[in-house]
Amino acid sequence: MERYIFYILAVILIVSAIASVSSKKMLRSVIYLLFTLCGIAGIYFLIDYNFLAAIQLTVYAGGIIVLIIFSVVLIHHIEMELEVAKLSKKIIVGLACAIGLGVFLTTIYSHQFNVVENYNSVTTEQIGLKLLSYDEGGFILPFEVISVLLLAAMIGAIVIAKGKKMEDGRPKSEVLNEDK
Amino acid sequence: MILSINIVENNMLNMLLIAAIYLGIFSVAGLFLVLLERKVAAWFQLRLGPNRVGPWGLLQTMADALKLVSKELTGTVKADKFLYNLAPYFVIISSLMALAVFPFTQEFQAFDINIGIFFLIAISSIGVIGILLGGWASNNKFALIGAMRSGVQTISYELSVGLSLVTMVLLTGTLQLSEIIEVQKNGWLIVQGHIPAIIAFMIYMIAGTAETNRAPFDMVEAESELGAGFHTEYSGMKFAYFFLAEFINMFIIAAIAATVFFGGWLEPAWLTPLGIAEVFPAIGVFWFLGKTFALVFLMMWFRWTFPRLRVDQLLTLEWKYLLPLNLLNIVLMALIVWLGLTIQI
Image 1 (tube, one colour):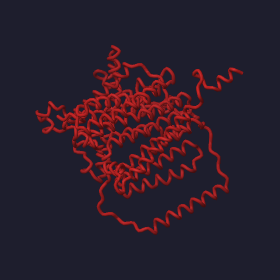
Image 2 (cartoon, rainbow over the protein chains, first blue to last red; image 1 turned 180 degrees about the vertical axis):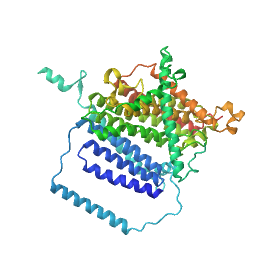
Image 3 (cartoon, each protein chain N blue to C red; image 1 turned 30 degrees about the vertical axis):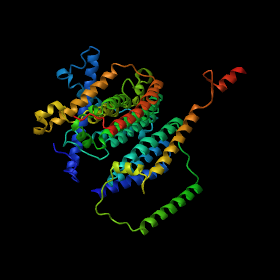
Image 4 (cartoon, rainbow over the protein chains, first blue to last red; image 1 turned 90 degrees about the vertical axis):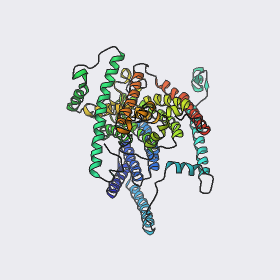
């Protein structure tokens, strides 16, 4: 049963990944990308790693894809189609992909995978405790570093969004234009 | 009605059966909610509401559904056909998936996942993609504006829904819905958590109403401004999918509130000595649905009481009031749990 579900998910993943890079319509590629991300979440669910699967759905499918859709919707008209790349570029990209695939396959086949007999599914509680523990193997430092990084990004976004300085409730450039 | 996941493990036929039962619940609840909305609206406006088809108009929405099935599926020539047809399924599948994790009684729960609440939040963040797609692929200005408004609204209010539920998770110490109900055998969480729990509940109901794009937050399909918003170009069953999903989402928001704040299928504490639940456990469905429909009624009450907000007012409400209040509330709840000031019955 699980094997069949895995194969179904794998087919969905591969087909939608290929469709995502080869589609000529921008929003369709985004949706194929969404299918790929949901497929990965499905594989996490299959190996009983529920927390990571839900994170995958919230952050990638719900967050990033929605933001990408937003930017596409704002800048892209429905009748526009993406240009087809030149043949030389296609060949270079194909070669790069083949090399990447080769590296992955040799690594996977040269590594000895051990089958774990009995395993415990990780609970959210364990993840939370590990994330905030400052003992050996705890993740408190990366956690704090990431939060500082996110704070910096947030302040940056606010500064950009605030834009020009206002004078009498109007942008400065508008006031200057009137003076001329 | 024993449907818990450990009994049916790996059994294909049972899985299909459960899926069929849930689809049945889904469509019947959807149709019933539409009727309820019309009846409630009528009461609030001193009308009678639908009263011709069947006794008290009970079969009115059935007739409407049959009509929608038989209608022609029109589409626009210049639409992006693939995405246009895909969009309704996104919306309806995401709300159907959310329905699977609710415990209707102690035994009647299809999927008791150990990250219950988090799964619900994750699923609800996907539904908006369907609305964005439908609005854009219709190639219609009104639909696009409606979809953009919906996107902005859902992304903003998702945060408040999530944070107000996190406040309650501080009390339960678990995300699993069956265990959350187990915790509430010492009193419903809204009693256990008293002041911060009530604040969290109010924020949750406001944000939940906004997340389902219902009045007074229905800028998405503001009739006077946008025609019908993101589903302007849809007809027949595809329109019905959007319509049903909206009502099912309302049911889901109310069901989460009933489970997390009001004890789910648990009976009120003053009824426990009678011991009805021990003799007849299926009575839990009655309590669960009773609480849920009381909250659904509350959301319908909102609709006929408050005027529609403007987009800027909507965003101000979320980012300047609800979000800071929510963060403060989490700290307050953490203090109360830490100091052991919860009320246990």
